[in-house]
Image 1 (cartoon, rainbow, N blue to C red):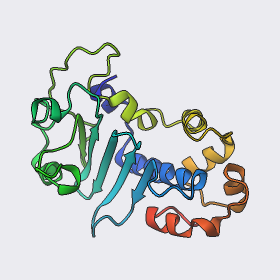
Image 2 (image 1 turned 90 degrees about the vertical axis):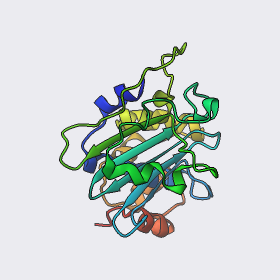
Image 3 (image 1 turned 120 degrees about the vertical axis):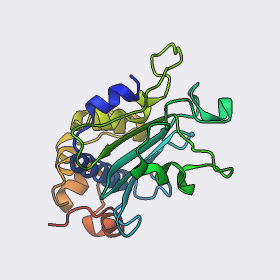
Image 4 (image 1 turned 60 degrees about the vertical axis):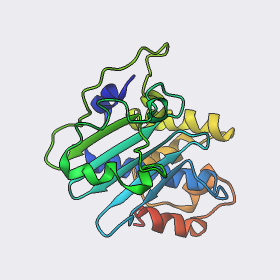
Amino acid sequence: MTVEDVARKLPAIDLLRDHCRSLAVLDAILSPEQPDPFHSFFARWSESEAVASMRDGQGDEYDIVFSPAGAWIRGFAHESPMSPYVQDRPWPGVLDDVPEVFASRVEEPAFTDEDGMPVATACLWRESADDGWSTGTIDFPDHPADDPDGAAGLFQLLADRSPSAFRQWAEDYYEVPVDLEAVRHVLASRPLTDAVVAALNPGLAVTDLAQDIERAGYPRR
């Protein structure tokens, strides 16, 4: 699966935003002491933008900027043959076709290295009036797992947004049982209850998550 396949699986911008917010809250519930969460969501990244992020702690990451113009996604798989560090520049086509409205995101310091090089092996975007997601025109290198840009691993929980997909991932990652109905509740963006939170993390209550809920802008009622 490449970024082109992911583009066909992503939902409308508002649905993706809600899903990313829920992923951040689920991670906050399952691992409240984790200083660098796997998924995070900043509802007020700027005056007009929100950002969803993923950091796997091993070098793979993505960021999604939600703005009035639409949404822009960059992903980086550190072992990808399309890494900009292989040729000291982004792989041809990954960023070349990004619309002008998102051009500033490509050069945003948060998404580039200390030398100003964009850190990306995959990029997608969707303007507010678009009816689908777009990618650049890319000549992908051969890859034994058909995942040259790392998109399959980076965006697995965005391409498959089902509660069962998250539960399987979370049980593997956190090595604890994960309640499917509680996951379903959070992925539906329903207000948290102590019962739902405790089903995912016994002993934790909604009040313990106040900062996480506020940061993500998750619905309170």
